[in-house]
Length: 157
Image (cartoon, rainbow, N blue to C red):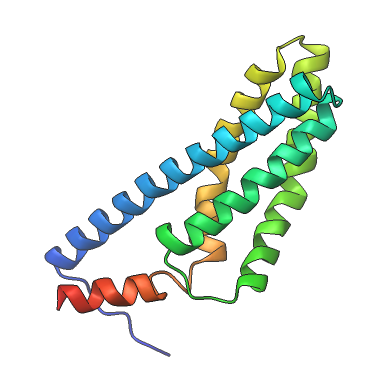
């Protein structure tokens, strides 16, 4: 069994800074994914006149692909196996999508919320739950292993 080394105060500071930057990047990329979801949902509902739930689902899939791609490369800097990582994200969405679709339907139907308020509420819930899932489940063992991370390590030395 590998012994855990006690981190120095400086190493702890670097780790805190790294995680803060990682969190900010995740937030910004997720906001861009939210914009894609919101705009595509608007286009599908308001211009094409597709029913609400298929519009929501298509927009969600588009945003997930965008978010996964950017965060894998730039936020988590992961060189792990893409299909396995995507399967883990798919597992998250196999739980989140039915729950969020039900919540969306309830908020827009039973509660009478406009779809965009419901969508924004669900996006915030998604942000709060998906970051820890990706950070601690999907990319846990492959953080900072891609070519971008390697170049940054070389620069720092």
